Image (cartoon, rainbow, N blue to C red):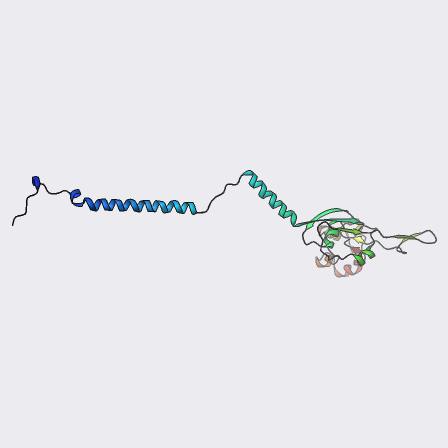
Length: 214
């Protein structure tokens, strides 16, 4: 049997034979593209947000940082017979010993015996607190002569404030060693002269009862 002849004798074109398949394919591609675009938009909206801080916000943050720093500081007063009475700002956790050192130690008229009995150098400072060192009382005897605590006490040399000339008066301390002592200030205790190897043990034994850090 011979195949039937097509109209006008022309074969069917590609579009005519595949019209439905092409439409379905294009529709599918469009739907896929819309889905991908929608996912990207959703992901962008849910991503990390960047906030632009204004000048007011930056100033507020700066003030907050300063406030936090001030919270970690102690404002305390050293009064009475100290070398430099006044109000001091010290790190949180500082001790009475730190405050007296900052104030330059005790003055020559300080009642050291009273201080040793009543002041705990290891006690922690409290913000707004005050340490007062009284003056050594002077008693007058029957001859009208004044004496401190009924006897003349030898004034110790403060290694935190003494000059080269004052340190040079100590046994075994020359000008060179005096300069070393000054360069290594401040001292929390007199034993640091040995610990820092500023003086030798034989010199230390001769001067330990004649020096102080207050």
